[in-house]
Image 1 (cartoon, rainbow, N blue to C red):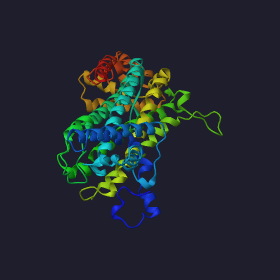
Image 2 (cartoon, rainbow, N blue to C red):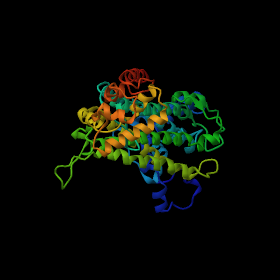
Image 3 (cartoon, rainbow, N blue to C red):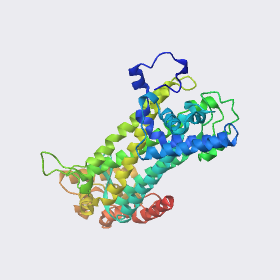
Image 4 (cartoon, rainbow, N blue to C red):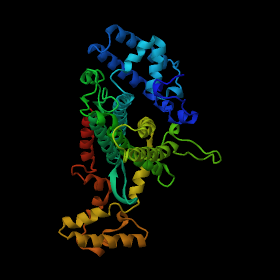
Length: 457
């Protein structure tokens, strides 16, 4: 089989070189976008009079037949044709004859592959935004049922202050909101069209790049042909946003793993998202959140890999850029499946509210409120802080908790204490007292929920 570029060469490509330099093993995933770009290009070639309308019609029919073969898994890809562009073009020429060779007029594989990746990322970025909506919706639905469910809030993984479980979960809603915003903003750069930039310097043919951009639903034409074929910023930006999103998924997954442990028992994941042990029949392992946590490393690695590929590359296109695709495909797939796991996992998990409440009743996470109580009575905060420290130490030494002390015990540490200290120290009171915007009080959380719904809508 002769190469479409083989006129210059007197020897066949080394077999190993042919195998290792071919990209069809992974860029076949761009088949739909490649044909989409070609359909816009051939329409433009006819519009500008570069080829005859009858030729364009024949090429368009041929491209549609090739695409149907691809959808039916009847299209044969070969390493000899190297990449998706040449495999599609070869199939087209086989379908309609030599006129298929006119399709490549006024473009290069360099602008063609860049166009394909812009179209691919545009489609998948929009899909990822929808999947993030699903996760946010699951968080809202769970939170609506647990505004008044109390669990310990942590800093340094040490009990800190009691919080609403809804408040805790809604923190992730806002993380995913920022992830969505980053992806939405990246569409401004993804929606640039390189088509028609040629190998690096443009073309002598009277093409209409604005026309093809509009046909493809892209908003802007690269003003510089060298930048058009060598720019991979839009992929880097996507991968960066994906890494941040996977980090958020990993953090939530880690909490699920911890909360499901025997030591916590705050939640129970649905059986459909867990697996067992081959040797220990009692085990129920949170494999899905563990896998999501680990997959963050893949996505981070893909970002670092592409950054390293691009570092120091001279303009314009270089074969190094063939290494831009596998990481991009893997990142899209990994983030997509992770979000598909996450939404139903959140929706189906059981919240052990009694276990959470019992944890709050048997800790010192209400200690800060004693300090606030004394400050309200005119005691300087630093003095109040020291008093509470001594009270907590007393409780630890006597195997007691704050609500188990008598009023006389409190007065032993400061005369300002009155009987209302016990109402102040109830977990419900501690949570309800934090009514400031963004606070964990049920009223504040309810407002936050309404705001979250407005963002989702």
